[in-house]
Image (tube, rainbow, N blue to C red; front, side, top):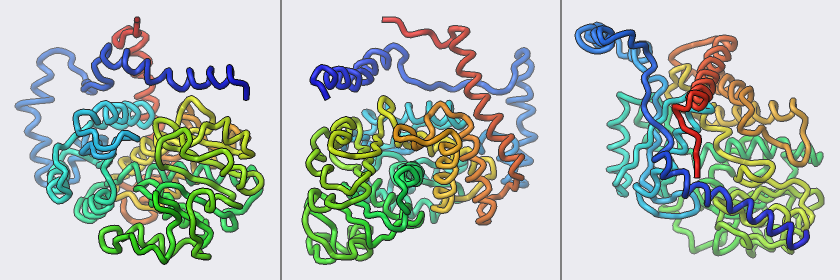
Length: 447
């Protein structure tokens, strides 16, 4: 690629950050609370508040599940974070993490019709953090854990899933894994390779890749064909530097992957690999062109570090990669959690589910892959884009049906009813946003 073309691409890649510093203070955040019931005149407050509101309160007291019928609990999600692992920025604190969670809430609403609220918690002790989150259960229909450092994020997620009666998931784990599996399914179709045969190298052993490993194995990848690489090299059964008690998830990978007990680092791990899945140090330069060039023919490269991928897509292409995906919206094949969490929560909320399981994530991934395949797969299109409303609707239906199948749903709907519910809520949010902009209630940004 010519130098002037690279400069253009780099300028394009830097533009979102520059625009963000202008537009965030202009709007002072991205979300707000808005009413959803009519106020014909002030006398309606006798219905929505006192004295009328006492009647539904009494009904809920007699039957707690009626809270889903009389309130918006079934559409409320708390986006909970302590700010200890925000994007690729590390431990920047709860206040600095708030813009990310506001953005997440915006995406929840726009793409999934879900009313999500950022809840930044100034507490790093995992047990105290857990108690705070558990206390939120009466208000929320679901909990989205976000940007919590590893390894405590695993402990927090497990305990909250075990001890709460609403869906709890950690988007950096299950969300990233869901969308990665969807992209992988279709990328393998394009290159004509079977999921059970491919050799997969994973760079980075944080919460995201640990969960991706678990989900892609459930999805058909042979764990013996997986090599995972951390800052000290390939995980193997001879690694005596890993604390087997404090880092149980990591040690489990040492025991169950890498059938040949291979040693070395990223270059050795990439030799002959069919697939690279990297969620590690933000690049460029974390993954080098010469390493990618040693991969198998028709290599698949997912480099998804934020805000900059481990290697620029054009460099991976020049090194011989066939299909390249990143976590960014300004490049083709965005493997982004935004394709997962809005619809997955839409589905589990609509059936009043008590949890989110790995099988629901796999159902969501298969749905996303199927939608993209219907559109027509090619090297720069392996997964639906964020503007594909049908993809979110079908994904929500798949998750709702899976929850019913697994017996975790408290409100049973047919496939047709689930599709109607998801379609109505997602289109309502989209149309409301459009109307607010058309009427200039949300003003156009001006320099």
